[in-house]
Amino acid sequence: MKQQQKIKVALADDHVLLRNGLASVVDGFGEYVVLFQADNGKHFQQQIRAYGEPDIVLMDINMPEMDGYQTAQWLKEHYPLVMVIALSMYDSENAIIKMFKAGAKGYILKDSEPAELKRSLDSVRQKGFYYSELVTGRLIHTINKLGEANAPKKELNSLNDREIEFLRYACTEMTYKEIADKMFLSPRTIDGYRDALFEKLELKTRVGLVMYAIKNGIVTV
Amino acid sequence: MKQQQKIKVALADDHVLLRNGLASVVDGFGEYVVLFQADNGKHFQQQIRAYGEPDIVLMDINMPEMDGYQTAQWLKEHYPLVMVIALSMYDSENAIIKMFKAGAKGYILKDSEPAELKRSLDSVRQKGFYYSELVTGRLIHTINKLGEANAPKKELNSLNDREIEFLRYACTEMTYKEIADKMFLSPRTIDGYRDALFEKLELKTRVGLVMYAIKNGIVTV
DNA sequence: AAACAAGAGGGTGAAAACACCCATCCAAAT
DNA sequence: ATTTGGATGGGTGTTTTCACCCTCTTGTTT
Image (tube, rainbow over all chains, first blue to last red; front, side, top):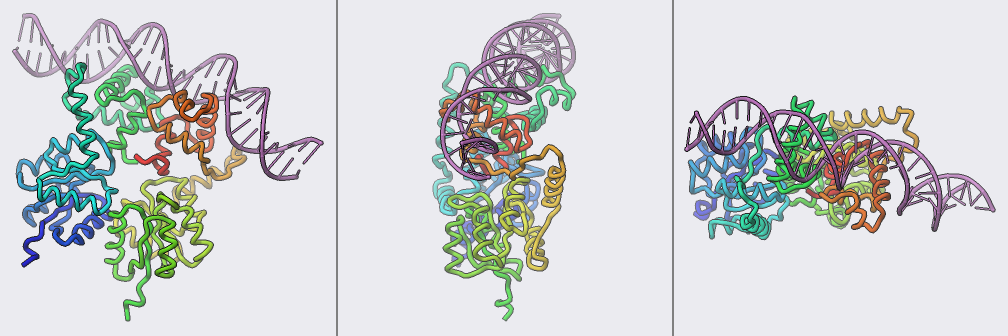
């Protein structure tokens, strides 16, 4: 009887060990039960067809094949009642915003305590969202930026393939000239990529680019 | 009957979710049972006194209070029969060497598949060690370095507090001059720190320092 | 057809990062 | 008592990075 009242949770994360940890903790809460697990977005789509709709999904952002943004977006369109809580390794303002734009109802870090995980599940179930201090703080920062006069074309950045390729090289000990060679571009163009990223990511130095790339899973450390 | 023949495994890791994942996977193997879990080295010392000696310990390297190096070292002295498998977030040559020097019998990454975790447990149990390709590759690199003529005083680096503090600042967008101010030192001295690190870590650029710091848990991303 | 945005790239100069030199002080080891 | 070695920091010069200027395509929009 009580069994049927349990909240169904699905997990999407390519790190098997961590996913198992989530599963055992979620099951341990009692009111929640793990309906199924997936390695990535593609796998998740198959699983949801096989097992049916969960109430809540704990969704990793950085996954192979199909990442958390895409999967959350897909869920929003095809299963609008399913609530997504984003799971991230790092505290990244951009990731937070992109996941909420993709329909996520909460955002927690992978090194959270089980208590916070439970808070997020409870909150999403009861109130439909979970806004931690982390999230609130980042969102306030974004709001403040929107108020600035010099914010003409903030299309809410998503980097293109070339920029991402550049970012990966920027995380090595190569000079920009060497990166230019690797990418078959002029050093000037690389200069342009860098400056464009500085602008849209609000950074000033190459170290800033490196930290950004790591926090956003663009490079795997 | 069979129960008593199970290999006793202990876990030391401050990330609760991942630790739970390890526990459920290890228990799931059948031949292994998790004897106890600990948040850090200090906690681990208490637990081993309370629960007795495990056969194998899965030991995280970066923990608060007392880290994996220290804890492995302590185990080597006080419980020499306990076999340690180092658990690391990243693939870092230095971390591997330091853990093996502290007596570890194996080294695996936290995003390993359960199959590899099992391989490492089986191997350590049966052969007393687990040398993956990852480990072997890194060790060969080290061996090769030892053969070089220009390797006079390779004391096998451990960074001092000042260097670590500097490294943390190096992972920000501060210039070296600004770092010098923060650390109440001359820019020249900072220059020296940087060059010393370049030398002993075999790096050439600040980006290299940043990547090193991250891979070794000196900065938390 | 004209306007416009995006991608590639040139030039210049200042600032930061890197390389290699050296001196001093102080504490610990021989 | 002298030497060694670490931590600190000065000088000088080159290379890389960063900032801000600009042109010229090409493709799309209007």
